[in-house]
Figure 1 (cartoon, rainbow, N blue to C red):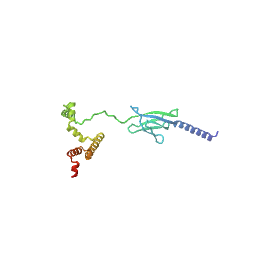
Figure 2 (figure 1 turned 90 degrees about the vertical axis):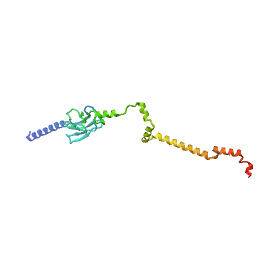
Figure 3 (figure 1 turned 30 degrees about the horizontal axis):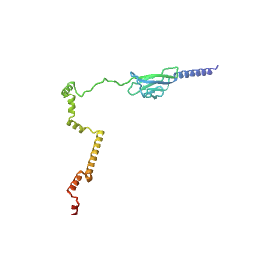
Figure 4 (figure 1 turned 120 degrees about the horizontal axis):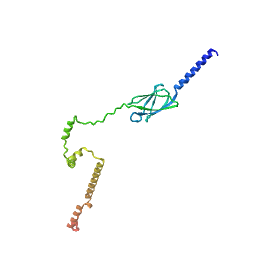
Length: 216
């Protein structure tokens, strides 16, 4: 066998072996998973997912923290979101064509203990103002004080009328106008005026409408 042919065959076999090993190292897989928050197991929505090993491809998880895209075995994936520590994940070797991962992200939000604010600078000031309050009245005395004409008049000046109250007031006004109109009509019509009828009866009794007087 010529030496040139032997060298070419060895080079070809070496190159083929290299391609086989490289293809095995860069195996394509469907990379899927769920992103949750550490401690609460609540999903982290809309996380930016960057494949730093393959042209910095960027993907985004959905509202439920789920993601799925095509990558290679050995790719380095970076998960980042506002308010969370970034997470770096390397896709491990697998015999399957897919790989599923559960990504936990640590929240950067620190929950402080609850406090109750007070409008007083110190407890002594609060105690002084509390003791100055007039709390001696019982419920009945307080109700009587709040229902005095002066208190109700003061409330009426600052409390606006409700729609029901305005409608009732307008209905009462229309009713009063109609009553006054009917009364005026009755008194303007002589046939409906009792005083006019009384005067007519008195004239008849006096004989103002007798035939003898009408002649003169």
